[in-house]
Image (cartoon, rainbow over all chains, first blue to last red):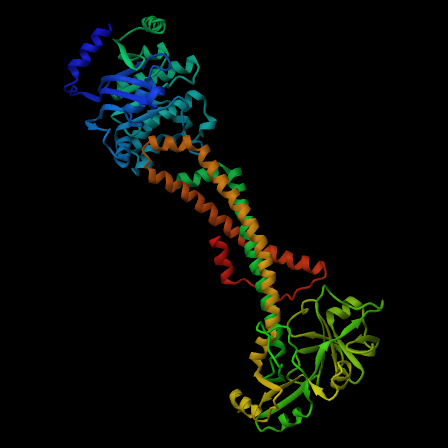
Length: 259
Length: 371
């Protein structure tokens, strides 16, 4: 299996496919220097096609969080290139990166990271308020309807359950219709029932809104909804599977953990 | 983002309140000090202006030498004969001579009446109707020979009644004088805890051992004569050991001593305020940095949602600014209350300061807000 990945990576090095929203080429990331240096990423190339849900899986320490941070422009790679919506981001300065985030990137966090003093609706439209844009009322209404919070608009995050808070966070990630949404362990802080609901919501947003999502997770059930799963171990992609079932993911993970 | 900063303040009521409280305390001590000393300053100023209000010119003895800070020199008395010469001048409408000194009133219990080290002023009152007389009668009559008038606050505290005999000591043995009246000074309720004792001229001269001499001659010019002309005429007949000043200049001269005292008090209290503010600034800086540390995640979230570095910084500064301005204004008014409280406190410990109502100087406002 690992040979096939390397083969595709080699052929794609020249030009990313036209429909790729996010592309990465030969990413490495080294923390520290000299003897104590740790290589979190050791040469990763990937393409995220538009309208797909891509899951990144791997045991803890495999580099999946580092990969996501670099793909999202929150961290810089030691070497390699990242392209988001046609823009090579490693050379961007701070204000251009900010602009890129506003227009092209949405985030969903494990711990929701909602602003406690704002209501659910204000949290959802926050990226637009920050950008100084006027929210499109119809779209915001549709979105709040979709995330199932029509009757919770005026509630503060502290008055909402964990699942409801994550719904607000998803709404916030989608409101600017970004080219790509990064979800970092979106179900990591939820019980299995609400996890299921959140995953369903993510799946629907891909199908109904043609949203492109990259999700980092270590839960096989979460990864099972993805169109494609990338398995990461020791800073490299060791396996890539399409439309894989939860059982097969568990098996694959066991194999990674055991090897 | 503006809305966000304000919401952040409201969202953290307790922390905001504590930080604001530290600012309020610091500003209050500073503004309170300024208000207090300004008020005292103004009250003293009005005392001296009041006491010279009828005088176009004041003749006094000239010290043989002058201390550079203008304090501590009591001008020597001069000969009474000068008064007749001054009165004879064509430009002079009225002229009255007076003597003054320390006159210790003795209470019913036989102890000297002293309020917190304030002076015991004794002076002669030429005539009750004299334009130079800053006092007004509350009850009784102006003193005649071997009589005395005292200020209202002293009479009240010592339960003096008109007609009774009061013992007074200046230079020489204790004298028994009849209380003929109770007076008050100009517009001020009390002259900073000082006791006032007024006598007629011969009694005062005897008390202070200045028989045949005067400390001062207050002069009012005729209405069609300028002050400059009056001064020129007086200078023409002045003996060597005397000098003449305008009433205003004399009031200014009088206030030099007290200004030194006030500026000491001001420095003393500002010292306290400085310490309070120094400590306060640490509290403020500390709670602000804690606020930011605790909110790092929140601010990081804002950054990932597309807020620029400048937007985040601006929201923090705005937050600090709104709180700072609000707290400073509250502190300013707390300072007014504090000054009022200080007046009361000084009063309680017997160190009555002249109080003419609180003075709010622009400087106070500016300094407090700058802090």
